[in-house]
Image (cartoon, rainbow, N blue to C red):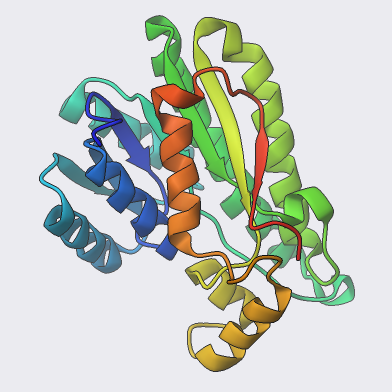
Length: 253
């Protein structure tokens, strides 16, 4: 449909399940892409998979987004490669499931770094570039737990709730200057983060699928493409008056 044919989009956490789905849908809609992740091997595999779907310009950049200097280098690479950024998709993150009494200081700070600091560092760089053009979209993948909270998920849910507060605050700050800032809040899906949530990639996929089916408020569990479709809508012209929203995807579960 080429709804994003004039856009340059930067997708963080691009090697993850949500990141790959979002990058693929953006490519199908004609966007040029900067894909970034900490895992170079999986990042290159994602880029090849996306290139097989649509012939759009794609550049990859390996970075630790918890490090401000690496985030700055990522955006300098974006400037040098495409000369602009139209859409930032903050998708990088990580999960933790543990009772509060077993949360370590390291657990707490890791959740804040990977889910909140990354959004802050990337959004700050993006806004600096979008303000002079008076145009841009910042889309952050938060979580339904950021809206509801969750037992045994204190650090993760707190970080995702903070992301929603950040989204709404930045939206109020830059909305009058043509920049829309929104969050997507998926319920639990079969993604890399949810595998981490359940204990790692070696968990029994049948047990994960059964749990997701029981929790789903719809006829099927949420899929990565459901999140990607919302990300495309938020990046396209049709959502030009949507700002400061935290969109729950997947109903209640």
